[in-house]
Amino acid sequence: MKRWKETLFILSHFLSTFTSLSAFYIPLECSRTNLPFNTRSHNRLCQNVQQQHVAVGSSLSSSSFDRTDDESKENKSTSTDASANLTPGKPNGYFIIQRYNVPADGFPNLQSSGLFQETDVQRLNLTLTNVTLPSALLLLDRDMYPDMKSALKASRDGSILIQRHSNDKSLDIETCKRGRVGDRIYPNDTLYRQIQLDMASEQWHKAHASSRHNATLLHNVTVIYEDDYMAIVNKPGGVNMFPHSTHASGEITMKEILPYVLRPPADGMSNVLPIPEAAHRLDKPTSGLVVVAKTRPSLRYLSQLFQTRAVEKTYTAICYGVPTPKGNEIEKDGWHSMTEPLDGKPAITFWRVVQQWKHKNVELSMLELKPKTGRYRQLRRHMAKGYGCPLVGDVVFAKGIEKNGGLPSHVTKLGLFLCSSAVQFEHPYYKALECSVGGRREFLSNGGKVMVHPDGDKMILHAAIELPQKFEALMK
Image 1: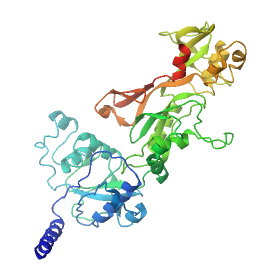
Image 2 (image 1 turned 45 degrees about the vertical axis):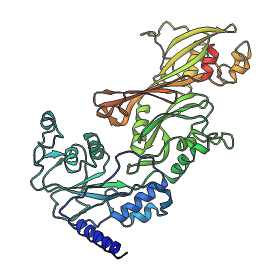
Image 3 (image 1 turned 180 degrees about the vertical axis):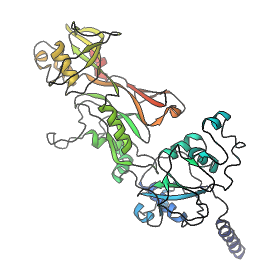
Image 4 (image 1 turned 180 degrees about the horizontal axis):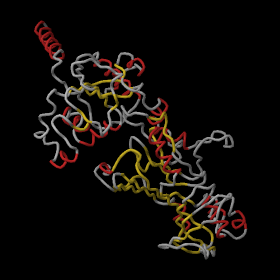
C-alpha cells in the first residue's frame, strides 16, 4: 500500500509539472466523428469543459474532453452551471476552450509540412508569414483539423476567434474578431477555438431518444436525407404540416413529428433551432418530400430558395382523362406549359403525360408536374379547371366525377393521388468541395434516392422517392 501511494504521488507531481509548462501546446483530444448527441452527453460535455478549463491569461493549456459512454456516471449538471466557470467567447452563448499562438517567425514548416501542393501555395498566396485561416489551423493542430475540409468548416461556422499580435497578452474579447475563410493570419497572432453551449432544446433530445417507443405517433414519416444542417423527409398523405384551430382535437402534425424522426445536430453547432422546422408547406392530402432546416441560417436560406422559386420541385399525380394541350401552350421535350392565372395572379405549371390506361373503363393518366409559381392548390386547380382532368381522390375538384361513374369508393378513399416525388436545390451550407456525402455521390435511403453534384462552387442536392403503394395498385 505504501508503494502504491508513492506511485500516485509521483504521478500527480509529474502531471502538475507537465500542465504548468505553458510554453508547450497540448493538443485537445477530441473525437472527429459526429456521435449521436443527447442531453446526457451534453451534460458530460459541459462538466468536462468546466473541469478542464484554465483561466485565459498569457497561456491556455488544455487536456481532453472525456467522451465516455458509461451511463453509470451520468452527470446531472446543466449547461448553465457549467458555463458559469468558462471563459465567454463571442458572441454571447460561445465559450473559449482552446488557445493557439502563432509563432513569432510564422510557419517555417509551411513547405515541409506536405499539407499543400505548390498550386495551392500559389493560388492562396501562402508565405511563411502570411497564410489563410484554414491553412493556419491545419498547421497549428493536425489532430483537431486533419484535413482542409475540417479547417474550412471551423472557419465558416464562427468557432475561431482572432486576436492580432497578442502572443504575449491575455485574452481581450473586445479586440477579437470571428474568423472567416478569407482572413489572413500573421506571426504573433492568437487564435481561440470556441464552442456554443446553446444546443437543440431538451424537448428535441427527449423526443428523438424516445422515437423507437412512439411508432404510432410517427405516422410512417421516413428520413430520406439528413445532416447537421438540414434534412429531407417523406410525409404521408393525410398529415397536416402545422397545428391549426380548425384541426381535429389531438391531431398530430409534421411539426410535432419532426423532433422524433430527426436527430439533433452535433454538439458545438451554432445557431441550432430549438426543434427542426419545415422550410415550406405541403397540403394535408399531398404526400412526398419535405425539406427541413435544423439551424437558423439554414432555415432562412432554404425559405428564400423556395420563395424565389430556386427549388426545382417535381410532383407525380394520377388524373381522370387525358389532358389536351391548348393551342397557346409551349411544348419542349414533351413538357407543356399551363399559364392560366389563379386568383388574379400569374400561375405557371409545366406538365407531361407519363402513362395512360383504363381502370374498369375509366380513363386515367399519370402526370409529372413542375410548378413554377406557388398559388393556392395550383396543381389541382390547373388540371381540374384548365383541362377538366381533376386528380383522383380530390374531394374538392373531383367530387362530381367520383359520384357519377368515377373510380370505386374503395380507391378514392385512399386519398389524393398527388405526391411530391422529387426535389433539387442548393445545399444551405456545404459547397462543391464537399459534394461527396459519405464518400458517395449517389445513395439509397428509406425508399428514396439521393444524389449530390457540384455546380460551380455550389453543392446541389437531388432527392427522389418511390411513389406510394396506392399508385402502383391503381395502375395494376
